[in-house]
Length: 392
Image (cartoon, rainbow, N blue to C red; front, side, top):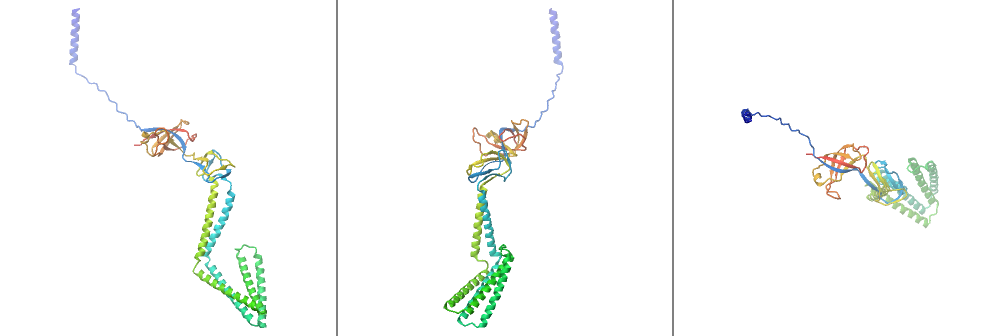
């Protein structure tokens, strides 16, 4: 046994010595290359789906509701009448009257500038009429102070007959046009001729009566009074003619302009009052709430309709804290999902970051995200989940 143990020891020793003399071999292990992954940091938040535009509508004036022309869930377009109060007929009549007054006032003002020749012609005609009246009055006075000869009487009588015939013909020419409009040119022409014929006839009658009458003190006083009046009328006509040659009278212009301004102000007030009786849609949208009915009284400023543009929806975050919001900027891309439509994945863009925190628990800043599309089935007020990609 001792020999066998010794042999084993010798063998082990030889093997150990041999192992120590063998060269050492190094085993190289390959190091795997690092895998580079693209990672975009995001900020996550919960939000609420809201219309891009909404408005609570009210009447500008109080009154009784005559018509409600739209209902809840109705789609309306900008300018469409939604509600009308009673009283529109009265205001429409007032507007028509004031529009007529505006036109009349404008025409009166324009006439001061556009028809100077006509005004001067009328003034010249007034001068001629006054001069003729002076001649008639002077002739009558002369006739009253002297005895007329038969030849003058006969001549005056003949002139009176001829003037009467001319007047009759002028009246016959005018009668077919008597019922025409006042601005009818043919009617105006015949009316002017008839008026002149009447004046000529009256002058011949006065002369004949003067030649055939007996001139007493009363007749002479009347003739002298007519002469004084004709002379005064001549002075007025001459003064007016001189004024017209210098242009329109500033006082007349001031009066005409004041009349026009007053008419325009009344028209604007009536139109504004009519507009206040009607409620129009300010933009295209859908009626969410309708709080008004026909026949009831509505007060000015009372909310009656909630209108929203549901074709363009946005998401407003509700729990974005101050740490996360500090990393966001306008234009950041967002990915939006919805509880109600789990399969819908919509891209959006940050379009607004609130400058102040919202009221409520904690410090949260609303961020508005405009959606690239609005999937079918989304409704106002639905919950949304937002992942906002943070830019560099």
